[in-house]
Length: 382
Image 1: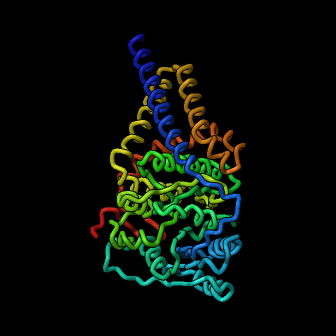
Image 2: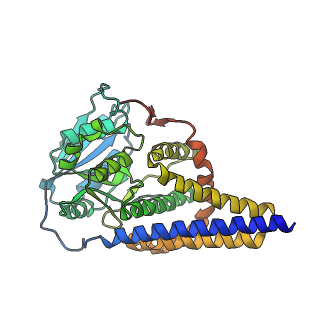
Image 3: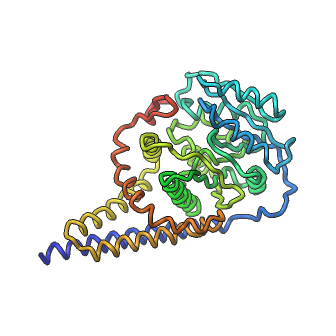
C-alpha cells in the first residue's frame, strides 16, 4: 500500500537524520576534547606526590596483577603510593594484599570500616572515600582491582594536572579478551568512552568510568567528598557532575599512555547486571539521557518499519549509514589508542549494540542494583 510505504520511508529517513545529527554532535565534542591533549612523549619535571586508590572486594584472582602493573610505572616510586582498600572480602584478598604490602614499601592496605551512619557512603563510594582519606597524595588516581595500567599512566595523568583549573581527569578503559563476546564489549567500551569524552568537550558531562578516574585532592575535600555527594550506583558520574558543577574543569584523555585494560564480563548474566547499574546511574543525566532514548527509538522504528514492510533497500541504507557513522565517530579514538585496525570490527558489533539499546529501557524499571553481593538503590535517602 502506498500509504504504508510512505510511512516507512519517513521512519527510515527520520532515523537516519536523527542518528547522523547525534553522531555529528558527538564527533564535534570528541574532537574538541582531543584538541586539549598535551604531549606525553617527553619526560616531565612535574612529579607531585600522588596516590592510587584501588578498592578490592573479593578480588583474589585479580588484585596482584593490578598492583604489579602499577609497580611497573615509570613514575618515580618514591613519589607515589598505592592504597588498596580491602572492602570486607571473604576470600583470600586480604592475605594477598598483605603480602603485597610486605613486598612493596609504597603499598598501603586499608580494611574498610563498616560505618553506615551516612547513607551516601554505601557500596563502592564508601570504599573509595576511605581510601582517599587514608591517602597522602596531592592528586588521587583511581582504578579497579580487575584492571591493569600502562607504565605511563601515572606520569601522564600527573602531567595533565599541571593546569590548576583542572579538577578531574577521566580517560579510556577498554575490555580486554579474545572471545567474540569480549571483543564486542571492547567496542562498546570504546564507543561509550568516546561519547563520554564528547560530553566533556561540549560542557555537558555524560559520564566516565571509575576505573580510570583522577581527582585533585583539594577539590575533593572542598566538595566534602562522597559523604556530601548524593549516593549513586554510578559514583564516577556523581563525582564528575559535582566537580564540574563547582566550576572546575574536567578532562577526558584519549591517549594510549593513559588507556587502562579491564576484564570483560564473563557471561551474559553479569553483563546485564553491569548495564542495569549503568542505566540506573544514568538517570541522573535527565534530559541528556532522554536524547539517547529518542535516538534509539527512532532507529528501532525505522528498522522495524523496514523489516515489517519488506523494504530491504531502505533497511540496507539505514544499516550502512549507522555502521559508517559509528566508524567515523570512533576511528580517531582507535588511532589515538594505536589500535586503528580494530575499527573494522564495528560492523560486526552493530547487532550487539542494537540489542543493548533495546534492553536498556527495561533495565531502568528496577531501581535496586546488585553490586559485589550488595543491594544498592539510587533513591536511598542520605
